[in-house]
Image 1: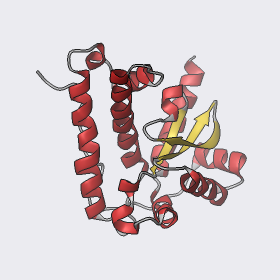
Image 2: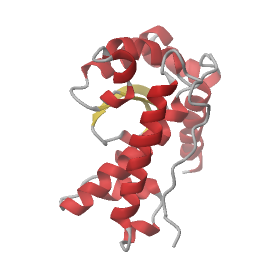
Image 3: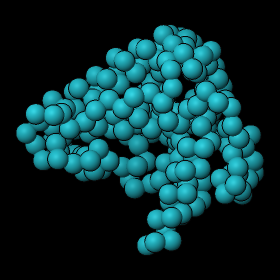
Image 4: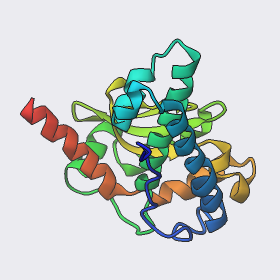
Length: 208
């Protein structure tokens, strides 16, 4: 029987984000941590109703779980979704926000520099393991942070970009200096991906 969830391929080579993120870090992060979340999720959902759901639905359905089996499913499903989103949030190609996204950033943050500063602060201030996010709600942008496997998507908040601040995302390259990792990785954000995600929300609101 085919397993319901797959390890999505990286959208670039393992060395493509160096020196901000080394090939060695991505090799461990993607090839071991991310892969293990997928494998564990498939084991946990085998024979359950979750095996027939899309990944987003699994995350949302189990995000308020009260039983240990469902909490384990959420932790692994959340991490699979978060990592899929994180890899696409980064790009080896330098870019800048344009169009509707650039206008929204200017309107809601006062400019790109202020947005990057807020993302860096969110990532630095997140206690322990977690994530920093650029999100949109009815077209208004804001920065959010979540712990462990939590993500705004589980609360039906539209995500534009994600930055991983679990130690395995940066420890091989930066040891305990999370702020240095954030300064480097925030220069690799995929603004085309963010614009696509903003456009999806705008399209959904128009068709609602």
